[in-house]
Picture 1 (tube, rainbow, N blue to C red):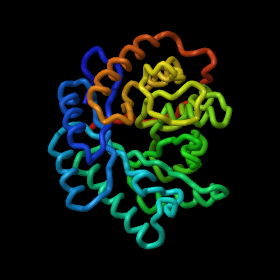
Picture 2 (picture 1 turned 90 degrees about the horizontal axis):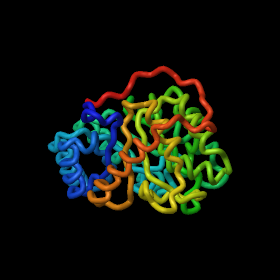
Picture 3 (picture 1 turned 90 degrees about the vertical axis):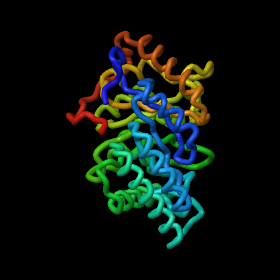
Picture 4 (picture 1 turned 45 degrees about the vertical axis):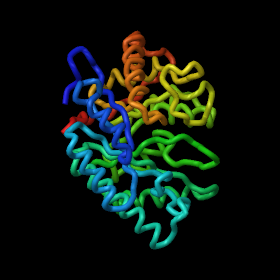
Length: 299
């Protein structure tokens, strides 16, 4: 699916699988060419209920990207016991949640399934990397892509916070990655690193999807702020330069408000920022060699 004439980027918005009202509104956006896809976060639950939700996604006949459940929904590959479910019960929950995720991707022809590496307990990072590797071995699927996470959130530490760590986790197990710009900014602030160097390092990875929201200037906490938030600190010149070099890669706007009106306004803000920052790339953004790859194409 190509973007409308004159729009050189591919943009989308998100909804939860258990929020039919927002999904329905975003479906109208997609049919009207306001957006190129809808990212759907799969919410696990009773089988009959989830089946109805997946059927609604399928019947809409719009381009969908699937986001797998994360630690907030009881799927935490790095440390399953942190979800409060341990042993056979925890494994059964995760198996069922991932089965629903793959079914949703199958029935909507989603080209990617975004996965969070997850959170881990203090002192257990090495064990967490082993667990996520085992998880990816158990759930091998060419559509799975790993998303980078903030370094910390609500006293939890997360795995997969920079390009090197994601590459090490995913090598030989997945075919691509999801770059969340706000998460990367948060991780850079927490670790006192340069956002520009961290962003440039992602140029060597196979980026198949992006997430975008804003974050408070100098903050390491991910809040999914509006792109034009007055306290926002994300460098959109660097972000737009990264996206311009990848015009086929879809970017999904992500906000905590399940309000189509918010997305409608933010789509206009994104468009203004994209055209505003068509100047040369920031001088302090280093360049790294990029690996050749095939572009993502919508089914």
